[in-house]
Amino acid sequence: MPVALDVPDLAASTPLWLALLTVLVNAIVGALRGYTDTDRHWDIVGVTAFALLMGLGGGFIRDVLIGNLPAESLRSPWFLVTIVVGVLIVLLIGSHVPRLGGVMTFLNALAMGLFAVTGVAYATEFGLSFVPAVLIGTLSAVGGGVLVSLLQGQIPDILVASAPNALLAVFGSVVYAIVAVWSPAVASVAGIATVIVAQYVVNLLGVRTRPAGPAGRVAR
Image 1 (cartoon, one colour):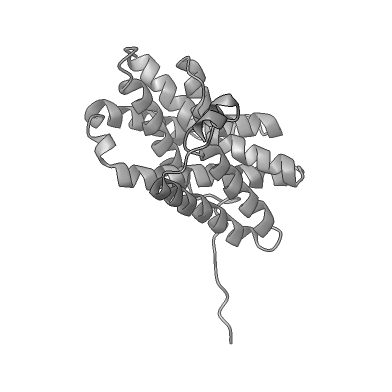
Image 2 (cartoon, helix red, strand yellow):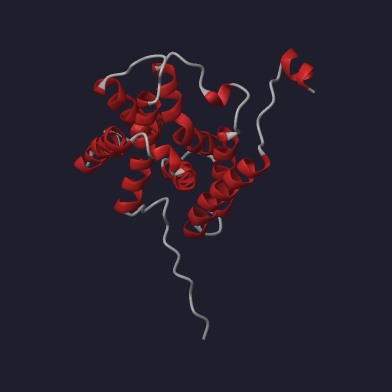
């Protein structure tokens, strides 16, 4: 008698601990962007704002675009508590966090993948078709970083030659949207795994996006 494979649907029913871990990782990354900025000396308000936008910004964008209001992260106090924890971690041991490069790379890819697949899942549940759903998933994954860059007065990395994070988010969103036609549960794992594996491949090969204009032609 065949044994059924019980795969949890991480996109539609994300365990609270995993959702909070995702927010925590992004909050730490956001807080570090303010904490390590030597050009502008951001105070505790600035560092907290970056943590808030990085941790919850992608979910805010997703929920606003699909009309899922109030935003999911505002329906439970644990998300905001997690943001505070992320800020405290950076304030207490911020100088040591960058040394955990391998761990942070994995957790950051996990966070991006989870935001991507949940974005697609929510969009699909609200009746959006394939392409808009993939767009929502991508914006969910990279939206927090874009908001932080704008607040810092910088051009978001996804718009210039850099690591192809936006493309990884698109890749994970597409994988989820395609596989979800067969099995949403398997699709959530496949979408997240795709982003994580692709992140390591990109880092290993040193892949960077190329400028589209004259600078790109000169670089070749």
